[in-house]
Image 1 (tube, rainbow, N blue to C red):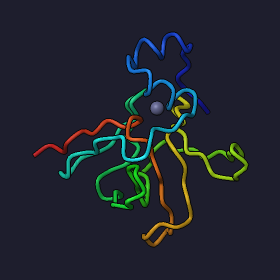
Image 2: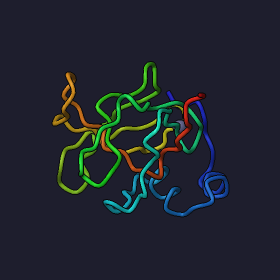
Image 3: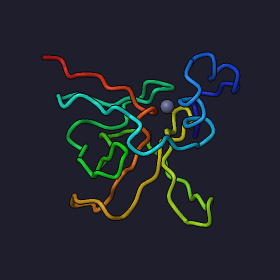
Length: 132
Ligand SMILES: [Zn+2]
């Protein structure tokens, strides 16, 4: 259930950056390795659109696939899944259920006990360092 509804114009204005808008609101994908990455320190990853906490540092791992990857969402994170059959593939799309932002896809080839790999566009996330 999406809680935040805004028009494309509103999102475009708020997000500022066209790539971020295209990825989060139009389900585009950033180019592999195009995102500079995030600091290696402890912290949380929030939805760039609504600020909901989606992932934390513990779930992050280096997958070398070209996008930030997580084995598990943060506890109680508003992560939703949708079936995505675009490009002739059946994949599971991952969205923020607070604002319906497209985040990326989840694949069943992760290293953790859950066996999942959340492959997330870097532009969809903002990193907030943990308080020291
Ligand atoms: Zn969101």
